[in-house]
Image (tube, rainbow, N blue to C red; front, side, top):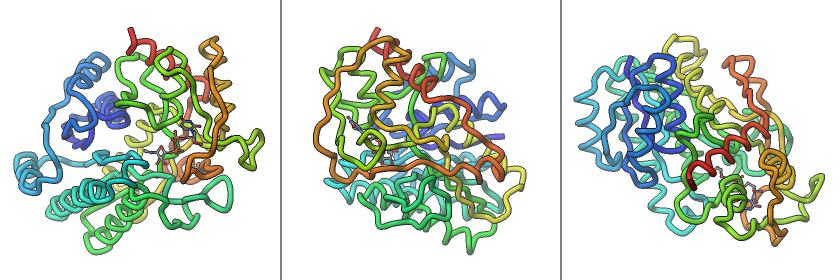
Length: 338
Ligand code: WQD
């Protein structure tokens, strides 16, 4: 069965491609290489021995998207990762985010609407909750006004898919609301490749650990938490990738109860920034150079998932601990810097 993975050379897309291939699916990747390289294909092959079909294609070009689906009528399912994802950049360049994250989604859905049956997995984010009132966060927590155009594109994306599913019974969709993905494949053949100065915590920790960065700035030490630093739900990217395969198979096998469903994908455990640093120090045996500085505008205090629905309805549960995920991130950093 052929599965299209858009953004399949990216961090989560490449790990999901590996898990799809491990389950015997034929994978075709579309990627515009704006935030990845074809070298990632070699990493995937090194792990699975199977080279996905790859087409360099910009989903903003409507005619190219139409042509792709004419040439690949046997695509049984789509996992849609391709999107811009830097919170800060989205504030400076909102139109780039609306065009790239929304325009492309509309073109994909128009193609899927032509088929009599299709399965669609959407990469969403816990960012849709903003600062939720209650921890852990369930899927019924209210969606709050987005703090950034990036977060808004995730909220709008979910609404566009839901509205489309209401009038297109042939489309079966699941939105997966990720918490904080981290780590790398245990083979160290693929992992996170942030371009320039990492915005996210874990790559900044490992780059500081390896000496690429002088010092980690901890954004805020005066939050109302156990140690004053923010709480997040850090999930191993391989666990997250497996959740995509389970969700896709729920749709392919017609197990979904409605043709639009939403699931939180996290570990269910919250960790503070200082706890993440201590995890790194445990798994690396190195002392991390960090300094607590002012809060980063837009950050929320706490977000971690209630995973009951994913565990019970989807039948998926994260397996890796924070230390195991952090160890995989550290091994990957050492491999990349070799
Ligand atoms: C985590 C914690 C920071 C860097 C965002 C998006 C989310 C998803 C993941 C794309 C926070 C602190 C960070 C640093 C720090 N994006 N931190 N020093 O902001 O929770 O989530 O990225 O898929 O949708 O919202 O992740 O890793 O940036 O921050 O102290 O150098 O680490 O303040 O508390 P975030 P993050």
